[in-house]
Image 1 (cartoon, rainbow, N blue to C red):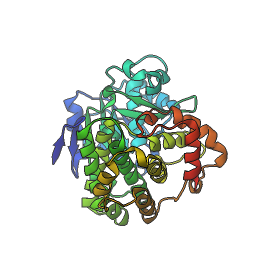
Image 2: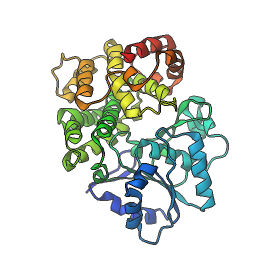
Image 3: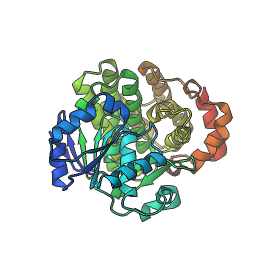
Image 4: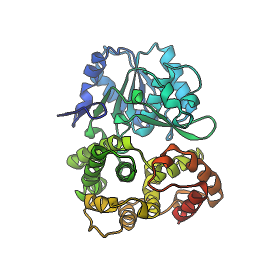
Length: 378
């Protein structure tokens, strides 16, 4: 069983979730709030996790996490936390549950509106120590279990980022066995989320060679070694699940050097609560458009990207990702996901203000984002 200390303390292997009780005891957490979603409750995963704790921990469950976490859901969870006298937070689920849990840990320890702590408003400097937080991912995508960020749809309708070292979970418990039942489409979408994190981190102009090395390793695991394709084809492939959960964690470790325009565009689309679009699927669909857009602004990094994906140095990475998306059964464009051309001006305005735009290799204005959305519409 591996123990990693890059970004945070990470317990990683099949069966690792059985150590939750020990981790809670280590931090003196006796009344945790479990942030999860109704899907995991219905699958019995919450009951299974609670059984591993025995009778020592008074577990309070919040299962109202939306597909894209909202400020209103955070406030509902905070009410439960306070009413039950909780003394820590456990996240069980995908990126939505983990991001919501981070926001809860922040909200129960800080005064004022959550909006005040968003990155675009200089909120990172205002974030001090938060409630003790443990993260247990059930998908291999966001890597939120080891990252310093959380993305929340605020009451003003914007999907904004909370970012601080204080939001990194104290311990991440990564148990690939929890992903064995994930259906092919969700495996593909979350896997491409992880790959997009690695790709955008590699291409970010910020100087951080160790993070770039981690990004390349994640891409190699997912694409060159074929673990993403294997996990989609056979969800019970334990080895592929192990490597994809590692790649997801590596993606989040790597994007400590920034993301880019793919995420800016995805965040804007994800803010539409009527469409309820999956973030990883959006990243997969938008990635080829941004690879084309950034092509002449990344130096020799496309050669490094191609090497990590197992391609010839002169190959077109955008074309390859389009083909890979098709192979994985993902949508071909944003139109297929229900995004309307009428929404492009608002989406472009949102994307241009997103903090990920500022670490894209090529500067991008709202007008350029409109053109990019038109391209991604297909």
